Image (tube, rainbow, N blue to C red):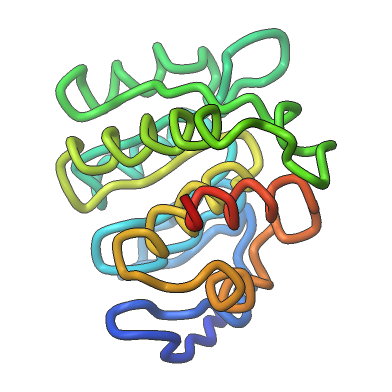
Length: 191
């Protein structure tokens, strides 16, 4: 059973208030479908998720035309069995982009001490990737923290939502527990 609670947070932006889906088996018309860790369908055109195995990647491909992958693929920072190669094998090179987002670059920096140029450069890579990928698309990483942060910054910039309003709207997202991620989102929106 999936329980979703959504509330209107802006013009075309729906706020996710409660989501009881993690790595759950969903029954759809009698078939079992496994969804990735942290999977959240946020709008008609964007979803986020965490680590996905091969069958979960196949599920995502049935729902989404594009995927933005944020893991570094170094050591254990992989969001798929073989990292981006697993993703591009299923989605294809024209429908998948790998734009690494180092979580340690922001996770432990409450002031997000990057210069405005560094923040703008970082954010603009994600914006260009999202704009260029076919929709609907999914933004994926290992846990969905980075994916949620990128989604929040992108949506706020595109819809003109002020930083604090967006942070309030996504307070239930997993990245919200990190002052560094919240600072990165707020700074990305402000620039």
